[in-house]
Length: 103
Image (cartoon, rainbow, N blue to C red; front, side, top):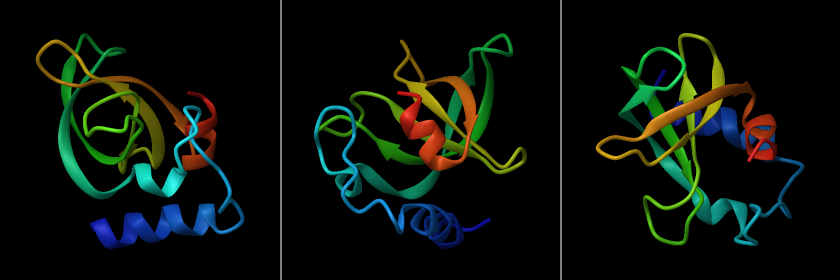
């Protein structure tokens, strides 16, 4: 998968949700990122490192708040948070909107 393909996948889901905001009241589209691969520790697998696509950061400053990631092998979006040394995958939830609503 390329960053452009992943961006299109998210855009398709968001077509009918232009007015959505994240739970802190920021416009959703301000939190979307250009997808990039990043290393995350999987909290459900002994903190084994995994490369996932980072597509969303919740906080007003990069790196703050929840993150939404995409696992292309499982075709699932999930939540991550900052860890002590590396970000940590909290869990995988489903499509982008299901993951957003699980915050």
